[in-house]
Image 1 (cartoon, rainbow, N blue to C red):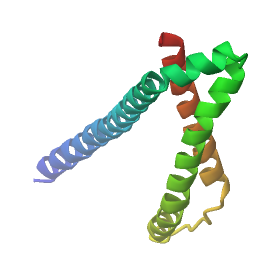
Image 2: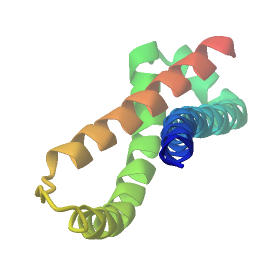
Image 3: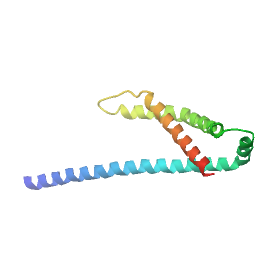
Image 4: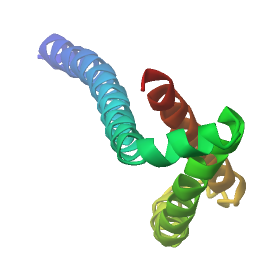
Length: 137
């Protein structure tokens, strides 16, 4: 009877370990696919806006504007939108993340550095996507 219990316990531990690894892989795949779809949407929006403003871009080029000044002009709109969305999302994210972290036995405090890094990463990705869409048109 004890041998049967040990076999079942060992199988359950092995099954939990395998399914735990599968859950982690699924989570990583979900986050990666979400980020990829977001980048595709950002690329599409950037391509659409650059196509809509092609006459303005060509007039500015004729008048002597450099590529850098044009990219800065168009990226300032994205940075404003990203800043507004960050200001809306950051308090909710901080509240729910802090609430989730307080459920653990070893508590840590959530600083502002992860939020700054996340905002910098999003702005960098937006600028890269905009630069890529400008190169394609």
